Image (cartoon, rainbow, N blue to C red; front, side):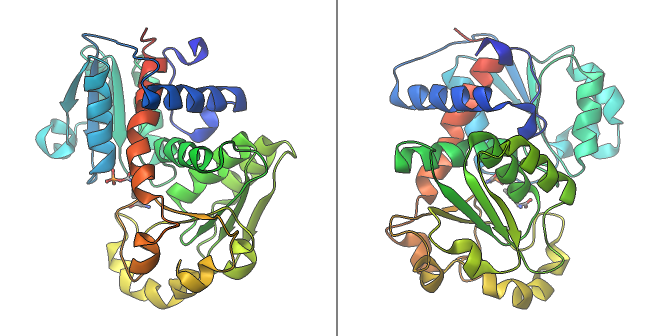
Length: 307
Ligand code: CP
Ligand code: NVA
């Protein structure tokens, strides 16, 4: 994992295929307890401008288990919330922290932070990407099927942050990825092109508006909220457009017999996923949420060169 020492993770595409596979294996070893790296006295800052349960808590617990410390630098309790520019905040926090995880709106904000800070910067969700989520998703898929070979992941819903990182991560991992969205909600074409380039012909990248075609014989069905943080005012209007993309029992019946169901959470039961499927035998939602901890612990250990 030497190659990740001191590196940023702003986008899933910051990793190459070998680094991604190595990181997933490392996360599995941490989960099994066969390796217990430590980085005492290292301090992680969490600079979050949006709400978070899983990302905040899993990053914090990961850092504590590594023997380090965490500072919760929620925008509302720092000068970030009063408009201190990123260029200034980055140069100041750089002098105190060893690593920082940022949750914000624009991808350009974390890019600017990374430009002005020498410490590693981790994307803890932007409007464009959610790479830490994808690490946990791929770990969950690998656990369910024993390997990532010859698998197809299908994402149904809004083609934004979670879908973007999943596209890039699956392409890097050699997993076929299909994304079905209502018209007007397709993933960014630049991200799709990047995913196709990263797949190097090893795996399929399908973007469609046809949910049934996307789900057919797929090994994993994945969804996310129909209106993301910052888009709450659009939630009502989106419901009828997104309804055909709901993960429900009849959609699951079209997938592979052993298909798993994933959701990054938080979920709106009865909208993007039914209660029955969420609580049913194909659901891996709680393993997926747990895997945020193991995947991010592996990432932090690799970035901080914990031994
Ligand atoms: N999936 C996820 O990132 O959850 P939180 O918003 O609770 O961190
Ligand atoms: N797409 C969602 C993901 C939350 C983890 C959002 O951005 O709100």
